[in-house]
Image (tube, rainbow, N blue to C red; front, side, top):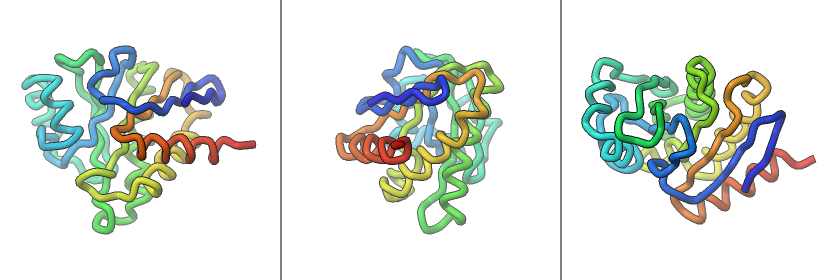
Length: 178
């Protein structure tokens, strides 16, 4: 699914975040120490190689809602933006902390002249944020940020399952209707 809003393309697709060669920056749903870990963060670190962990070391620890940027190392992407999403029901206010991840990632992209960025569904894995609620926060925040963007022209959401993709597509259609 693809929508164009104020000159910015928003895409939702099922795939692997580390296989987005046409995107300048991918977003890592990081842990506080910016270590490889499991899930999406582990996959990003494995694909990027040991240089990514080395570059991340002095940037840790992150607080929920914070974002930092590094090079892409062995990834096909020039940059990785690392965001620490909230643990659902623990880090409060979880909706605002999650929104900050998307907001700060887009601001970092703007600062670094990044024209395209790919996000996973931040906090919906190990951090147990319900996919429907997380999707609503993510898409509302991105839609609110679009008028403030001058460099970012493509925002892609790369979802791991068909169910997550369906939630994103339905939510994007609802939020952009009429």
